Amino acid sequence: MQKPIIIAHRGASGYLPEHTIEAYQLAIDLGADFIEPDMVFTKDGHLIARHDHYLSTTTDVSDHKEFADRKTTKTGHDGEDWFSEDFTLAEIKTLRAKQAMPQRSKQADGKFKIPTIAEVFALTRANGVSAKREVALGVYPETKLPGYFKSIGLDYQPALVAELEKANWWQEQFPLFVQSFEAQILIELKNSNPELALIMLIEKKEDLLLEQYAKFADGIGPFKALLADNKGKSTGVIEQAHALGMQVHPWTFRSDQLPDVFASPQAEYDFFFDLGVDGVFTDFCNDAKAAKLARIARTIKEL
Image 1 (cartoon, rainbow, N blue to C red):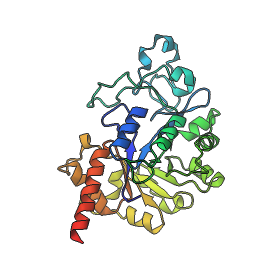
Image 2 (cartoon, rainbow, N blue to C red):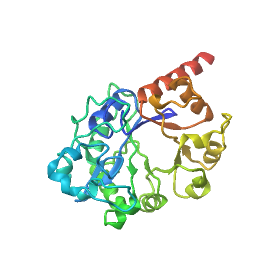
Image 3 (cartoon, helix red, strand yellow):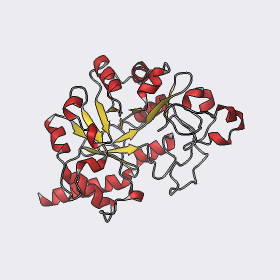
Image 4 (spheres, helix red, strand yellow):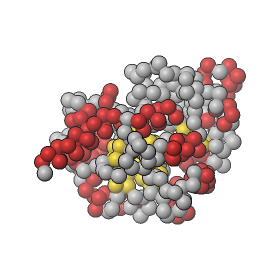
């Protein structure tokens, strides 16, 4: 797979409600190399694709009178909400997804179901290598709040391994990265299944402990602002990660939230491609794909 890889952040979330089969399929059709499902648990232990375990921002749960009494508070979350771990999978399947960001189209709100990770893996395999694709499609799941979920008896390590077994990953390995903001779950996955490729997510400068992460992770997923200073020069994070044998996949590239210093999405991608990133998380994978193809064309022309 030619780098930099294009990772469809929550699917084609710039266009359709995030973490739906339809958003993932659109991302695939727009040229993504990987689709990225965030994972949370249901009450009965199923893994579903949601960015957060609270449901009000991405589903129509508030419209369901039968679930009014499920609204509650949880440690670590401000205010009341409905939470995935208080719903069975059957109940989750009665909800419909909606666009989380106010500036984006709401036309598809209420149309799409909440998928399980099993359904996402099935979609990945169905779109593997076909007439539309030259290389196998990858999947890039994130374990959300693993420490919290483990504290209530829901453990990602056996749950994710079981889903990969059902998807036959151990025999027919499709491209896969597993990511988390919490090191412990990655350490547990590395110890139990060393063949898994793991990515440590990083949001803050003080968490750039790359030598420590290199002991168990194959790469880092840093907030993109950590990679360059205000003069447009590399902070050295990419170079250090590469020296440690780790890939660098920054987040999140959003064409409708372009930083002021860039005149176009192409300019932003070109800047980070030139810095040497190995992949990008993007809500608009068509723009990332166009930037990647333009870069390839320029390289060929210069030969």
